[in-house]
Length: 323
Image 1 (cartoon, rainbow, N blue to C red):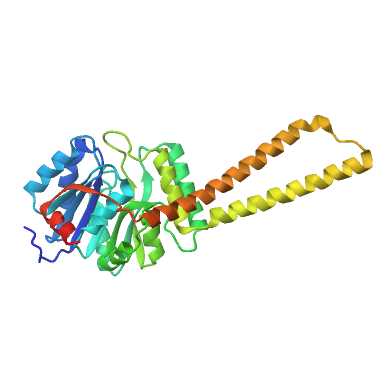
Image 2: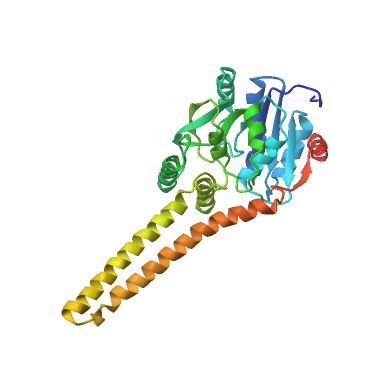
């Protein structure tokens, strides 16, 4: 039985979205992994606006085991926000974040904790194989991580997701980073604490469909790039400068043709149309990039809460009142 004064050694945060079919297995495996490390643990499940019976099953599990807690959002706020909310209410010295679809094996947590006890502040679970995922997703994910690594000014780990362990001091710094467009794996890498990784093979999804379709993956990738790099703005400026040079050279060419041949090549309307549409596309692209950065500024200025809790365990409710 946990008490407010009890020292918690390990906290596990599990975001859940429409995982009704695997809640029992999820709880069982998480508890077994935590018990293998310490009896002083807590597991916080974050229901991110599930539309199935996930919340009902999570409540039942929490009633059976006082080491389990839950909080439920008023609507779907997104995966990164769900992880953030769970971490906000942890009390452990070490904090593990792991997705609730069981593609990442909880059985790896003891090995990660061992690395933490060896002095590492951040322990990543690095994917060796990703079973059950399409060739397109594998290629685009691999390309993104490598592009991201080249764009940012700090070292960012390759081929890792949100399955990781961090120390309490890392979390305290992470809490000061209040931006609403979260990219947690980038924020942790930016902090620069001593880190390592353990390798694993990611399982394929047993039930349902992925909660991260291409659209969400693209949004997350763009959040990551714009949160930690101004390279898109520099690329837009370079592209605009290049187009100006090309346009200037075409202008000189047109003048020379008129001077020496005394004619304007009127039949070249196709090239004119292509040039106009190309220039228009470049301008819209540059405006879109600038607009994305402005949008991030507006979101930060609004200072709206990152999430809204609709229901929660009693201990979490008490912590929320104190905050």
